[in-house]
Length: 126
Image (cartoon, rainbow, N blue to C red):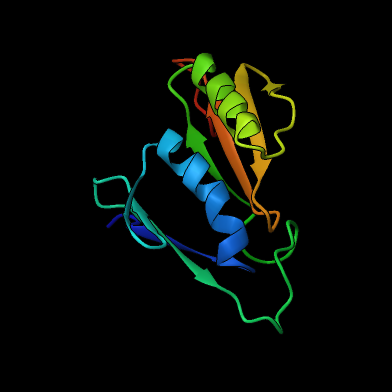
């Protein structure tokens, strides 16, 4: 078995979808239909809007901490940062964590996305 989808619940589809419409194509996803993006290899993201009476995302609370994507090279990490910045979204400085080059971004609700290049021969989970 493999993971086939992730459902992200956001506080506002209107506020969040411009962020994902800028980010997801750079990560290899195409819009399949409203609020659903696929990699065309059997994996997809779907977006739903939360109930207004519930609390928002909490980075260190129970649940997902972040989503990580592996970049083929350092230039891809830099180009994602530049493109998201040019699209008007806050992008922090790129970090160097050991041999890896990483960009950690937040969507409008604070849900974190990581785009990292780890050099060949280095196990990213070590």
